[in-house]
Image (cartoon, rainbow, N blue to C red):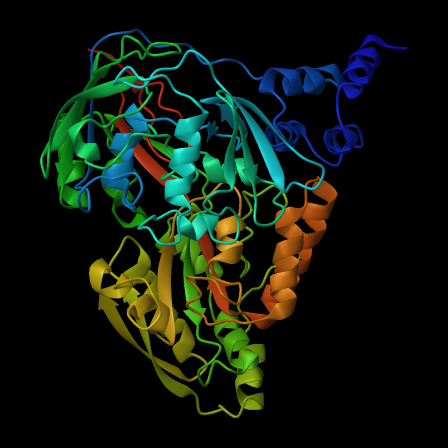
Amino acid sequence: MPKHFRTIDAARKTLGAIENSAIDELLAGRIGRREFLRHGSVLGLSLPFLGGIASAVGLGVPQARAEGKPGGTVRAGVAVPGGAIDPVTFYDSGSYQLAFQTAEFLCVTQPDLTLKPVLAESWSPNADGSVWTFKLRKGVKFHNGEDFKADDVVATFDRLADPNGPSNALSVFKGLLSKGGTRKVDDHTVEFHLDAPNGSFPYSVSIDNYNAVILPASYKGDYEKTFEGTGPFRLESYTPKVGANFVRNPDYWGEKALPDRLEFKFYADVQPRILALQAGEVDVLDAIPLDVSQVVLGNPDITVLRVASTAHRQLHMRCDMAPFTDKRVRQALALCIDRSQLVDGLCRGMAATGNDSPFAPAFPVTDKSVPQRTKDLTKAKQLMEAAGLANGFDMTLTTLRYSDIPGYAQLFQNFAKEIGARISLNIEDQDKYYGKAVFGQSDWLDSPLGITDYAHRSVPNVFLKSPLVSDGPWNAAHFKNATYDGMVNSYLKALDLDSQRKAASDIQKLLLDETPVIFSYFPDLLVPVRKTVSGLPPIAAGLLLDRVSVMS
């Protein structure tokens, strides 16, 4: 038996049926190295172990990046936090970029969407994915000197899953994890007993769910006073509306941070942030909108990290209000859109084309054999006539003033005009558009036609559930389809790749037919840094600055 077969055979004997099915997929050539690493990491297998298997079948080892020099200060420009910073409730980039420096997750996503253990050393599901067991890292302390233990994990997720509390993470945990479902086994082991089986649960407790930073069990609020956590930096000072300073944590459990200090400066708008970067007042910005990218793309002193993202703009049509009760009208509007103009024009080529489902090209399970919907005015007009709307209709599209969305709204208005749909635009400030983010008190959730921004996730679970299942809290389309709900349940509980792919394909085909929401494009994430900066990981979740260095 060749050596590499002996290596794989020995590894197989230590694994269960689900883990071995991933090796079967690799050996059969149905997945490559990247997807093998991603899927294996979700199941809790270590990246070195998975890399060894991939190497044994001749799939190489990526070159490690050179490490920067320790010392110095990294200056970051971010948006002003939307309010008092509290990991339980925050929702805005300006807040969570700060927390990411001082607090940590059980695991974090990597650029290839694999999961890297952080405060968890390993994890594994039971046979049906309804219980996930996490082994916690030992020897970790919070900045206040308390030991990190299972009680802290239990308390953190009980806060986030409490239906009677203010948690922003309920959009992730509703129907997935209830208060009391996180249970201590011993000081360094916890079990998550889920409301329903879930094949990719670890992403829900990773940086993908930015509220899921681990806080001490003793946490009572007032986060801004301490920025308590276990992370590589600790708070030096925080001034609301102005900025925050952090210093290297000398007692950090892992590899010590490279920078001595981090200085965060707050800016009320994106333009002052860009001017500060151009002037050398800051070294790095959080992600910038596509519509201002040209300002920095041509600057010789600035590098723009371009990260393929699953972020998107959902154009919803209320399925419970005429004329959108007729799916032919919804299909007609989707068919009038010139997606190439959106990708190449509006997004300047820095986006992937959408096919009217949340399954972006970046997701490994996306069925790319499903025919791409393209502009077809002849068919669109036929559908309008069949729906009794040959003369078109009048409708207001309500959306928010953010990034490329107003430009998208104007282009959609022009596209719709070609089939007789007379669309007027109501573009609002973000606070007015989202309102209280509950039905009856939100222009987002109540408008018959609207466009909403959705941030990147490494798995499509939230995109599939919250905006599209019948009882979803973000179901602006008011789409109720029992068949769809069942398909989503099948996808979410699947542990093996073959079942995930089949469910994903079924969902894509159903949504193409029903078209409650139009997914036209998935814009790339653009993070500008000065050319003196190195070591920033190109992940879409946010800024992690502990391995960053700045040349003087």
